[in-house]
Length: 233
Image (cartoon, rainbow, N blue to C red; front, side, top):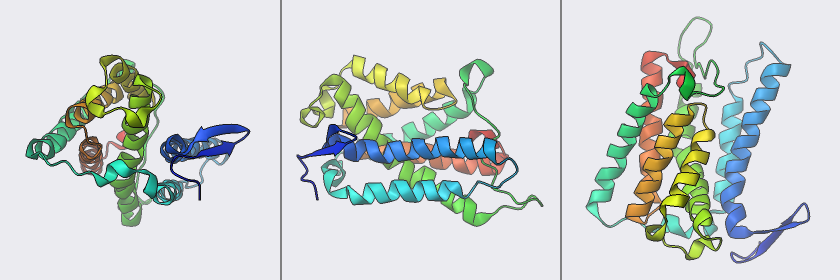
């Protein structure tokens, strides 16, 4: 076991364990996205929807393995207003997300994740895995990477010593643009990144953007199931 203040040597490079623990789950998620895209082009017609479950399991395993690193997850917000603001901002981001979908606001994209069988009936195990991944695992993984690590690291490289309350506008803007470019709906992603970064900045607690992010993703998932707008998944 590497100490919490130690270094890992990966491909000849030394990487701080605090950085690695936040980067690895996100990197696994992105690698699986690339694998899914490659398999879809190499194996047309093959049902690859269960790859999502493998992806979420890999991310969850990495988060669980490094759980002792994420001390900030042990701090619970004490102020009532943040518990109210988090879901409200999450719903606002959801509403903006499904409306910021004009052609010029999108890069890439595709048909999305359709959890139905050939007869048009829902495959509930697929749906439950998708909702669990989107509303539980992804918010924790992404907020640990984008807000806990990258947002603060842009401000100062010894990011753990930086209170979220002292994060500057430059770091918020840069990280939010990068967060937006991770998504096919890039403008909606930038708006979401700004919202979650603002919550982190004003609350000083990582759970606030995690909860907001989870509400956004859960609301989006339920709306997709209701509207059959699979491209948003």
